[in-house]
Every structure is written in C-alpha cells, then in structure tokens.
Length: 190
Image 1: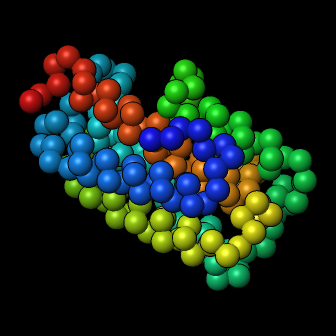
Image 2 (image 1 turned 60 degrees about the vertical axis):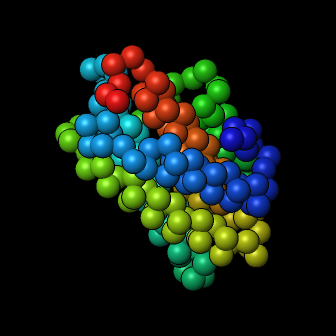
C-alpha cells in the first residue's frame, strides 16, 4: 500500500481504496467471531472494532458525495474561506498515515461498539467500500480540488473533496495496519 496520498490523483486514490478492500477480504475475510473480537489489551481495539470504526467514520461521507453529484450541495460559510481547506486537508492526511508515528484519538461519536462485534462487520465494511468507490468514481468529472466540504468530525475544519477521498483511504489504511497488528499479537486465537 502507498501511504503517501497527500498529492495523489483520484486514480491513485481509487486504486489504493480497491487494494484496501481486496486485502481486507483476503487477510480478514475468514476469521471467526472469536478472532474478530479478540483484543490484545484492555485499552486496545479488536479487528472488529477497527472496521466498525471505519464504517461509522465513513458513513457521513456518502450523503456528501450524493448531494454534490446531484447538484444539491451549497457551500457553507467556513467552506468559502480560501486558505483553510488546503491547510486542514494536508494536516489530517499526514496525521492519519499508518507510518506517521502519531496516534490520533477518535472522537466519541466515531468510537466503535465496545460490545461483541458481529463478524459480518467485514462484509458491511466491504459493501460500504464498494459504495464509496462508486461515488468517488462518479465524481471523476468534477473539479475535486475546488469543491470544499466540512469535516464530519469537526465542523470548523474544511478540506477539498479530493482531500476527503485521500482522508477516507489513508484512514482505512491506518486501521487496516492496526487490525493486522492485532492478528500478529501474541495470544491471538488461531
């Protein structure tokens, strides 16, 4: 996987998103419920929680893409400030990279379920990924750098729609790597 998506074009982003989906299916697709829910430590996430978090985090982006593609989206005040989108997008992408060395804490609204995660979470994630890929592909003819959106995480943060695509994928890469580390941890049920 290519973690340096900061300056990537849509074709590269789509390829990386497809790679995340393919690797998720290959690496985690046959895990049992016990394996999906196993946690290496009290304050660490299970594989299921990693993917549940991605589903919750990615969900708000779907209606944004749908509104833009339908021509129903109006820019909000913050989205019109010219310098902010360029600054925020790059900072978020860099912070979320799996190789950044930083640990970004999720906001409570985006926490995964703390209870038992259904192993079907992986199928749900892959279905959502397919929808997001279709929406991103459908936006190919738009000027993605010129379209500014508000972050679903913090309403004062704005970035371009292209940066939103980059953020979605680098975030997925981050949690894919995290889930892989769970599988590699001592004590993981085989």
